[in-house]
Image 1 (tube, helix red, strand yellow):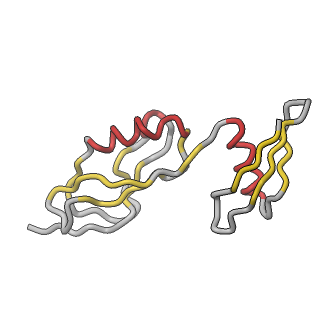
Image 2 (cartoon, rainbow, N blue to C red; image 1 turned 90 degrees about the vertical axis):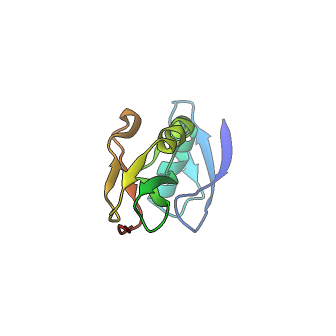
Length: 121
C-alpha cells in the first residue's frame, strides 16, 4: 500500500510517498527532514494534529483568548476537544503559556494560552 501526502509539519510542505512494506514497517520518501519521516508514518498509523482555538475570558480586554494544545492530539479527538473548549471560561489576567486545561481528555496534553490578556475592570 502506498500513499502520497503533503507534510504539514513545517512551511516547506514536502510531498511525501509513504509505503507500507510486507514486514509491516513503513518507508517514507520525499521528506527533507526527520520530522517529515515521523509525520508520514504517523499519518498512516495514528494521525495527530495540533489544535488552536479560543476560550471565553471574564474581565479581559477581549471576550475570547486564543489557546492551543501543547502537543498534537489524536485526530479523532478534535471534535470532542472543541465541544469541551466551548464550555471553558477563565478569568483574566492570563499570560502566554498558562495552562488553561490540564491533561485534556486524558491525553496528557495541556491546553495553554497563546496570548497575554490583561484584566480590565
